[in-house]
Length: 166
Image 1 (cartoon, rainbow, N blue to C red):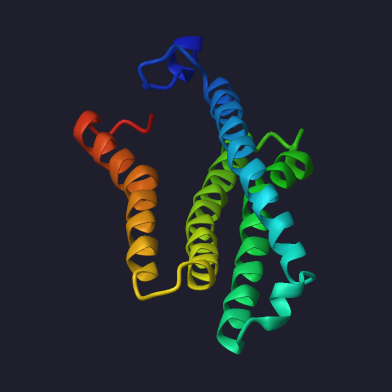
Image 2 (tube, helix red, strand yellow):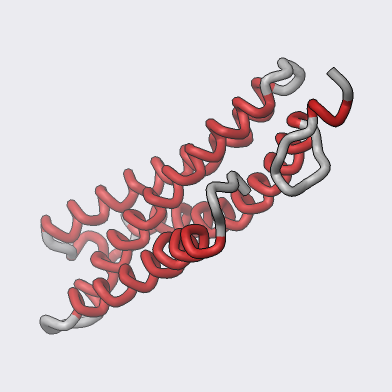
């Protein structure tokens, strides 16, 4: 098999190993952005239980808080997982498989981030925005997240690709 036969038909002049390296670099850059925000949010959430206002919250708000912390923790786990994949699988010559799994976990992390952000908004707006309009605010922001993070990218992918992987 000559070198040209080993090249993938992706519109790029790269081998399977080169493609995996490129996709890995792209994925890590994307995860760095999400990880920073999640870590800041999660760190903030961990401090809330130790504030005087927390003790005055009702049972429902405390339950929302616990749910939010658990979601934040799960989000952190999913978005840190690609680092673990890279470290534990480095040198095993299975980078394409590692990239595929790390990519899946990143998507799971984004879905969990959506749930964490939603739960955080519910908690904060229930407390801060007295009145019945807070669910509308949460709904509008969640719709915006869905549009930006999933709907628009999937629409662009559908509209501008013809079965290409990337």
